[in-house]
Amino acid sequence: MSTCRRDKMHEDYELLLKMTPEEMAVRILDKRRLLSDQISFIKQGLEESVDELQENHDKILVKYNVSKKNVIKTEKTTKLKEEWDSIREELKEMKTQLKAAIRINDESEKAITYWARRVNEGTEELDYDNPDLLRYAKDVRSGKISRAGKKSKQKGKGGGKK
Amino acid sequence: MKTGRRKERDFLYDDLIDLSTDEIYAIHAEIKEKIAAKVKEHDKIQQERKELEDFIKEVRSILMSPRSPEINDLISRLNIARINRENAEKLRNELDTRVPPSPSDIIESLKQRHKLLWTISNRIQENPTLDEEIELFESYFEYQAMYEVAIQSDEQQKIWTQSINEKNSVMKELRKHDLKNIDNQKINQLRDKYPHKVIGWKSVEESSKQIIVLDNWSQSWKVERRSLVMEIMRLESFLSIEGRKEKKKNLKIKSGEVLEKAETGESLTLDDLSALISTGDIGKITKKKQNNTNREKRNKKSKKRRSKTKRGHTRSKNRTREEDGND
Image 1 (spheres, rainbow over the protein chains, first blue to last red):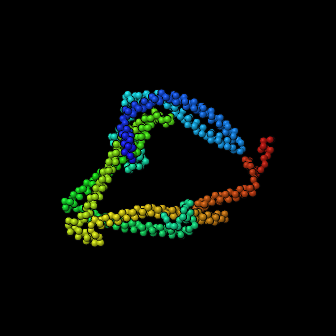
Image 2: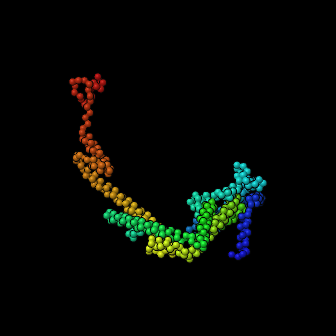
Image 3: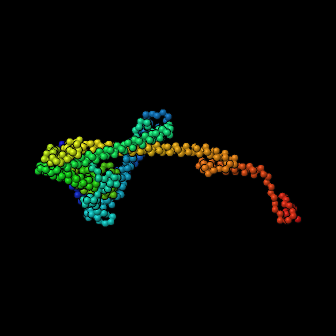
């Protein structure tokens, strides 16, 4: 491995290991705000794309069904089938994206409120519904078994050298 | 068990179906004999192992006895290495139980979590929900803490490896000294006790290797014994199934005879009845009896006699006008 690459890797490790909860919370809040600003446009764009694709899909499907009824399968039928398959896949992907965009849009306000509170009030326990976000990390540091360790123990694989 | 007799089986007993009961009993006895012989051999090997162990213990105690400053130093180094190894192993195992993933795996997990929390994915569906975000946040910092523990575990692993290396180098030094400065009386005592062995590190090493060979034999015997016992159980279960079938067949024959006996009106013994009950033929007798009684009933003319309360008059079959109340 070249020295340059090793240095880059080391930097990455440092970044990952030295990241503080406060920094992370601020970053998530920024990300959520950015998403909130853009999501309505993204959603609109996706809705238009889905409508357009759905229209194309329905047209091709009609053509394909007509072509399929012919006893002799022509090259055209095959081409239509391929086109229909590809548009169907694309439509499926777009619908999934639209669903996700709707989900993000719906919870955007709630998420911003949550992370803003975390940024302002900290990552410790705020109330019954908002427990300490670092409780698992604190458990590990205080000598308790990690959640991964518990899972491994349940599977009967605990204690073995990785 | 690989006897060569058995091919790939489609079901549990397909290799036994064509064999006679005597042949199966012979195989059964053969396996039992084999097990008995092997058990004897195993006992012998265990005895041999114990002797080797005792020999190693005694020779080592003399070879490792403090006798010169140089050897004393080596022995104390060896003890330190042993203690370090044991402590490191214990601590490493404990840390591994708390945090099973390796540091590199933890870094990979941190990278994945960081990406999901830090960036906005172009594939909008890959962006986590609020609940997922919270869980990722919690696990991210848990993994950070886990990394510290995993690093400690790796450090213990290094200490463990160093201790092993130290032990090996000290042993190498100790071997060079062999019997030097050891009291002759002690050596002679051992020579008398083990006349066929050469006293020294070489014989200790040879004996250790022999113990490993014996342990391997015991291990393979353990596996073989399990399969032999399973085979015996298989043979016994097959014989028991066959025995039950045979018994049922005999009972069927007997029940035929008993049925005949019952029809002719002969008395039945308890055994006869038991045969009938076991085969389920007991119902046939009652059926036959029922058939007979039905036939008898049909043969008999039905004579309805009416009762009359007046004395001195015979009972007639038909009603009189008086009785009908038409007078």
